[in-house]
Image (cartoon, rainbow, N blue to C red):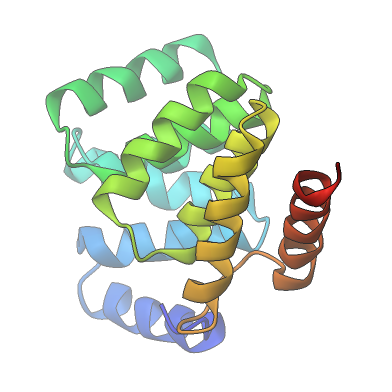
Length: 177
């Protein structure tokens, strides 16, 4: 969570070495591999996690980012329906919908994820982007502002300079006659 992925990976590897069936270690290694653009490694870790727990929402979400198909979307929607407070499948669905430029649906998914974790700068930023693409510029500006405030307090993956530039563009349009 502090953004030190090298240390996080070393710790997850150590945990996995000690307890090869530890689902948390497998999830963490899968998430880090996905973030490092190593989809084959990520798939192996997430699949191993699902072998231990077939309902693992993080592994399902991770695999959905690697294997974008209709069955995966259905599986995510079922997981969300069964666990309304499960963040991982909701975010995976939102990211999938955003990649497919299904902005209204992505906006709804990001909004629900934001309701679960309102202090997360990246979720707030992604909600702002989806609002922006949905034509809700005023709300988008509010959420870009919130994302920047949150990113000043904790590590974030989005680019604050790009966020600030988009916020400036939106507020400049609002200020024009």
